[in-house]
Image (cartoon, rainbow, N blue to C red):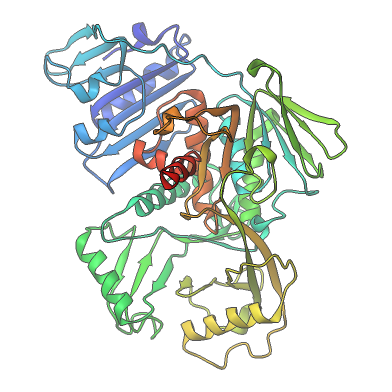
Length: 524
């Protein structure tokens, strides 16, 4: 299929390729690369029978190309797809209703069985595509969420100003020595499991595009894909996990359940999950890699203190960010609040709390080396740079100082996991305190920020009024390394009007407006 005559003169072109065909897709990519009149962005969407259920976005060497694989039956996949399709490959003379819903007027239709090419004709009203955004933005917060937002926008040609109240990046919870990366599982494969699976797989690919994870000069990001062993807490917990393993045929490179045996040296007397693709990373190194990837399109302003936002009299006037002295710092039509628990008036109505987390730092020899991350009530990382991390607490207070009670809690958890009560009794009080923003449902907030005043009669997310040009990337709790890449990709795609990398119900589960609707239902 030669797409050149159909995509020329367009801002972007989205193709539904039907069942995945690597040869065909590679041919289309070759056409796109060699066409000097190609669209600015190319999206290819295809069905696949391989891999884990759900949608999976595959990042390409050229950031202007997106490939989405939908692992689901045709109608189920298209029912959850949010995209505007300009060209489609399908067998048969009749367009399936699930596909027709997504087609643009005059979309190109190709039947590979006959070679016939036609145009989609319909009398139904089709909304015009949204205008291309002004690709200038302010991002508030230089942690994992903000850095990922900067990188995903800059990859799309945006110019971004990053504002951080601290004198450097990664000075909140993102400043910890190590963060853990692993998915979550459930017997019914619920929304949280589906979301963490999508985020975990996307993040694993994403870090590779930035130079990879490892120890030493060969990797851009400090860490290890050493695997994570999640031990069952007790026999009852083990039974639940065994039921999950029986209910789902999980690929061995994603998750493996082991019943109790001596495979792990007695560390899993009730059984354990092994996540071979999991591991640990130093969040600050990931932030540095993301900001470096932005290139000259990114301007960084550190030490600006607490920022206030002011919207112009008309929506077209955009937003102005001002410092504590009232002086203008930056202005842009788009603002992304990624500042964790820092107060911004326009997001103050969003329900999240700041949760204290203390991590204990131990000398490398304070506990036996396992070669992987061990998790149960807490986690213990392998040694790196002569140090190991154990933790972290979930405290409800705002004390920023290290304290012995939290240290003792971390050490007790470590001794319990390693079944050795004698470990690290003389360990000095060392570690770090950070504060995580946590939403009531423990899921992030990704999307346009609702207007504080509730719209009477609004019962669906699409009916909620939003603050124009204002978006949130908040409440990653203790899973920023997993959430940050996919959440930023989801938000950037939504702002650009591109196909979303997640199923529609999963994107809705992250929308900040979900809490407005829940509050209304509670009141009524």
